[in-house]
Length: 527
Image (cartoon, rainbow, N blue to C red; front, top):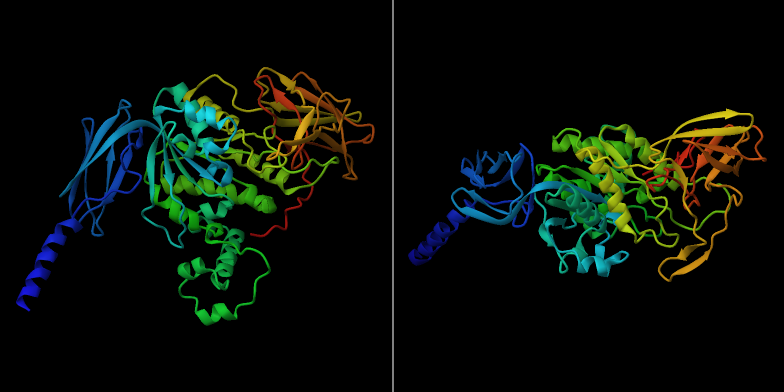
C-alpha cells in the first residue's frame, strides 16, 4: 500500500506544474497577424494570481490571472513595423510564437458565398499558382455550435501560397489581396463562416432578446430543435429535455429539421464569441440567402447583428462592409414580386448605420448557381470600399444609388448619387447562363428592346407593373411607358434575376431600388 501511495504522490507532483502552464487561445499562435493599433488585447489562461508578461519587438505588457485563471494584456502596436517578429508569453512557463506580423485584421463571415474556397472559383488554378504572399494570411475557424458562449475555438493561421491559398475564403482572399497590394501592410483574414445559415445564428441571444419579435422567433426554433426526435445534436445541446417528452412530441413535417447551426445564437456562441477580444480593423459579410423568405424581418435582424458585434468587440463603430445578393434563378419575362428583391432592399437600408458599405453584385450572378464563381470582383469591390473610406484613396467605391424621383407629364425622372464619371449603359450579353455547372446558355430576350437601359419598370395607381423605356440624361434617368400614362412609382432590377445594365463611369453597377412602399411579399415571413 505504501508503494502505491508513493506512486500516486509522484504522479500528482509531476502533474502539478502542468496545470500552471500559461495557455493561449488558438487564434494567438504562429503566423498570426495582429492589428496595428494602440490597443491590442492578448489573452489566455494560467493559475489564479499568476503573473504573465508578453513581449514583441521591444514592446511589452503584463497581466495577472484572475480568480478563474483568466488574464488579458494589452500591447500598444500603433507604431509597429510589419515584422515578422517572434513573440514571447511568459508566466511559470514560456511560449514563443514565430512569424508574427502587424497590419490589418478583418473578420470574414456569413454563409456559403463567404465560405466558398478559392479552389472552387473562376480562374482558380491560375490564381492559386501565383498566390505566394507572406503578407496575406487566413485564420480558418473550425465549424462548431454551442447553446452557450464559449471561450475557445479551433483553427489555425496559414500563409497564402500555392499549397494553402486554395482553402482560403475566395472573397476574403481577393479582398485581402487587393487591400494588401494598395496599403502595403500585412492583412489577416479571420474566416468564420458556415453555408446555409441565417443571420440570427450569428447574433448573440442578448441582442436578439432586445427585440420582442426576434426573441419569440429564436425561442420558437430552439424549442423545435429540442423536441425534434432523433436529432442527436439537439439532445447534446438540450439535455434537460426528457427522452419521453421528446418521443411524445408531434412528428415534424417531412424534410430536414433545422440544425443547431440554424439556431439563434449558436454560431455566435461558438465561432464569434471566442475571438471578440481580438483586435480587428473591421468585418466583411456575405449572407442573406437564408433570410430571403423573411426579408422584411431582415430590416431589423441585420442591423442588429452589426450593432451587436460592435458592442461585443468594444472597439466602437468599426467598419462593416457587406455584399448585396447577386442575381440568381431563371429570368422572369414580366415584372415580379420576390423575396430576394426585398432582401436586397433590406441590405441597402442597413447603410443607414455608420461606417457601413455595400458591394452590389447584381451583374455577376449566375442563373443556375447560387454560388457565382466570380469571387474576384466581389473581393475587389469590398476592398474598394475599405480603400476609399478607411485609407482615403480617391477611387469610386459604389455604383449609382437612387436619390430622388420627379414625375411630370407622364414621365418619371430619377436622379442618383455616386455617378462617378457619369451614368452609363453597360453592354448586355447576347446569351446568359441557364445551367452554370454544364455551361448551358440561352439567348437573352430583352424586356425593353428599344430602350437604352434595361431593368426599369413603372406603374400607375392600379399597381400594375410594366417594363419601361429608360434613357440617361446627365445624372438622371428618364423613365416612361405608353402603357402607364399617369405613373406613380418606378422600380429598377426588382427581381430575383433581373436583366439590368445601369452603371457609372467606374463600371460599378447601380443598386436595385423601388420608389414605392407597397406591401412586401415577405411581410408574413417567420423565423
